[in-house]
Length: 564
Image 1 (cartoon, one colour):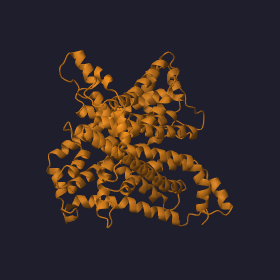
Image 2: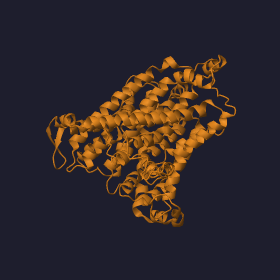
Image 3: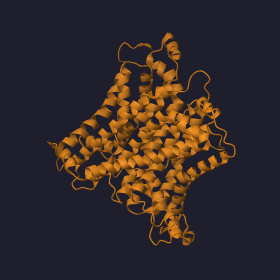
Image 4: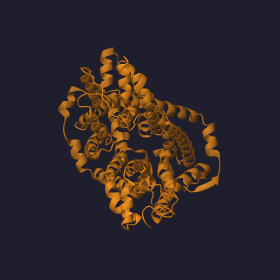
C-alpha cells in the first residue's frame, strides 16, 4: 500500500488497535466485575450482587473520605498553582538573572521518589524536626506547634510535590502569549501588578484553569502522601480506603475495593470531561497570530534580583532542603532529632550497608528493568499511533481514544484492575516484573502519546508524498523518513516515562511480588518499618541515578527545543 492511501484500515493500524484493546479493555471489565460480584476464599468470583455499592452508601465513612479527598485535592492544587504560576511568570515574562536554571531544577526534581520526598518533609516538619524546634524556641512552648500528620500537612507536601510540573506547564502558556496586550496596558498607565491582574491572568485563564483541574485530579487520586501521612493522622481518603480494603482487611475485601475504585474512576472521568471542555473553548483566548507576534519580557530594573531571590528560595524549598535533610540523616547511625551531637556520629556506614545489601541491588536492577521495559513499550506503541493520528488514517480516532483512556484510571484503581485481571489469567503472571511492565505501559500511554503526537504534527506531508512518489510503502515511509525525524522526541518521551515509573508507589505496591520488588516499594517498606537511616542512604544513591536521567532529559530538551 502506498503512503497516502486511506481507503481501508491498514494491517499496522489494525495490529496496534488489537494490542491496545487487549491491554486497556480487560482491566476495565474485571474492575467492574469485581465490584458486582462477591469474592470467594480462593479469590474467584462468587455470585452477582449490589451489596458492595450499598455498603458504600450505608457506610458512614464514605462521604467523609470523599470530602477529605476533595479538600486535599483542592488545597494541593491551590499551592501547586500558586508557586508554579509565580515561577513561570518570572522565568517567561521577566529579565530576572539565572531564571532559566529553574527548568533544570524542575526536571531534576522529577527523579526524586515520592516516598523519599514525603519522608524528607516529615523529618523537617515532624515533632523533632527543625521547624517545630524553631517555633518552640520562639513561642516558649514545650509541645510541637505544627502537626504534620494532618490535612494541612498533607496539602502542603502534595502541593510542593506538584509545583515543578505546574511551572513546566504554565511556562508554555506564558511563552505562547503575545506581549503586545501587556505593553498596551502599560502604555495606558497600568503598573506591573495591575497589568498582571487585568491582562496577563485573564488571557492565561483557560490554561490556568485546565492546569488547576489536572493537578486537582492527580491529587484527588494520589496514594503516596495520604498513605504515609493521612493514615498516621487518621485522615482517610478514597485511595487509602481502596488500599486498606485489600491489604489491611482479612480476608481481602476485593468487592469493596472494586466499588470504591469505580466511584473514584467515575469522578475522575467527570473531571477530565470538564477539563477537556475548558480546553475546547480556548480559541477565544488565542493571542498568537502570524502578524507582529513576539513574546516579550518585562524589565524589572532593581527588582530583577528580588525575582531571582524568589526563584532561589523556591529551589531551596523544593529540592535543596528535602535532599539536604535526607543526606544528613543518611550520615548518622540513628536519628533522634537535630542536635549538636549529630556531627560526632557522622559516618558512611549506611552507604556501606546499602552497597552490600543484596536486596537493594536486586531492587535497583528490577526497577531499571521495569522502567526501561515500560518506556520502550510505551514508545513503540505511541510513536506509530501518533503518526497515524496526525495523518488521520482510518482507525486513528479509535487509537487516540484507546491511548487516552488510561487517564481515567487513578494509579491505585489501575493496580486493583490489573491485579484482578492477572489473578484470573490461566497462567501465573501476578507478582512478576512482567505484570508491572504491562500495567505501567497502560498507565503511561497518554504521556508517550502527548510527546509523539505533537512532534508528528510538525512533519510536513510533502516528505511522505515524495517517498510515495518514489514507490515507498507506508511502512517504508514511516521507518526511513518519519521515525528518524521523531527519534529525538521519542527519546525524550522514553526518559520522561522512566522518571515517572520510578516515582510512584501506588501501582507497584499492589502488583510487585517477593522477587520483583522495586525501589519505590522498598523505600515505602523501610519508612513504615521505621528504618529511616537506611531509607535515607538508599534514597540518596537512587536519587543520584535518577537525577542523572533528569539531566539527560533537560539537555535533550534544550537541544531539540521541545518542552515538557
